[in-house]
Amino acid sequence: MTDQPCNLDDFQKIAKRKISKALYEYLASGTDDEQTLAENRSAFKMWYLRPRMMRPVGNLSTRTTLFGQSLSMPVFVSPAGVHALCDSDGECATAKACGDEGTMFGLSQHATRSIEQVAGAAPNANRWYQAYILKDRSVTLRLVQRAAKAGYQGIFLTVDSVRFGYREADARNGFNALPPPHRLVNYDEGSAKSNLDQAYNGKSQKAWDQNTEQLFEQNVTWDDVRWLKQEGCGNLPLVIKGIMTGEDAELAIEAGADGVMVSNHGGRQLDGALSSIDVLPEVVEAVAGRVPVLLDGGIRRGTDVLKALALGATAVGIGKPIFFALAVGGQEAVYQLLQMLKTELEAAMALCGVETVGDISRNLVSRHPSGGSAVPYHRSSL
Image (tube, rainbow, N blue to C red; front, side, top):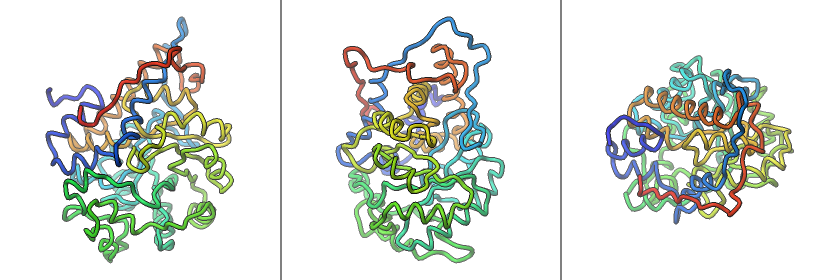
């Protein structure tokens, strides 16, 4: 194939030729048997669109509003760490691409560019910050407060990571630390470098994420959500990321969440969990319109976006493809990827007879009368 991507999978295929095997498999792999990784994608094939005809679509628009913030489309970049492994500008490049497109960018606590660096590089981008609850809760709180001070417009709290899933690919490839000179720079405060790298880069485990999990608090409760909301978020909206049941969606709202995000960490945590798209209807029913419901996991096409919105998602996030776009062409390639997805969404909306995001409804999707035949996804096929 040429190095001119025509769809999101093309970015992955091209990147695979450009980066090391160990890095590629760190980015592309899931945990254990990779069942959830595969089904995040194949499950979309079990939902079918019901196009409506003879409806005006001449003024079609993908614009939407999330927490009062205007987005060019209901697609954003999910928080995910270590972008600088794929491009020298790291998260700064991704944030600038999101700013150019007019959509939201999520900065991971485990980023390779700091809260302040990204804010300086992309001052006009809609930036959100993603937090974990650390054993040292004072560090968690200071990081969230730094994000608020730097003008971030919302907070994600990831709740699915009291442990990290075991990624056999990393163990096989010896990927058990960040290659120099990369660091999780948000843990460095001011001119002082944190000694937390002795944990996350300690190489005591065979896979890198098993080293980083040593930082995380394992005795968490919903009271930690209340604490972060009250002590750290101020007026910023708080979205709980990693919700996989209706019960937890209810508890998140009771704890003060302003939104919930259906996510299984891209199939990189509990293998054998349901795909994100198959969990979505249960969570939407439990939430009952009280707060926005976001989703990531398996989005590769504009039709995937449309299906998720029809099932009740307010907006969807993109994770893995962003890394591959960075590896292919940095900021410009990330912008190209976002534009590509937007164009596909526009076409899908027009062909289904919906002119605006607000026109998308549940009756736009259904299961196949015979159950359908899922097209399996295998990482090795890319």
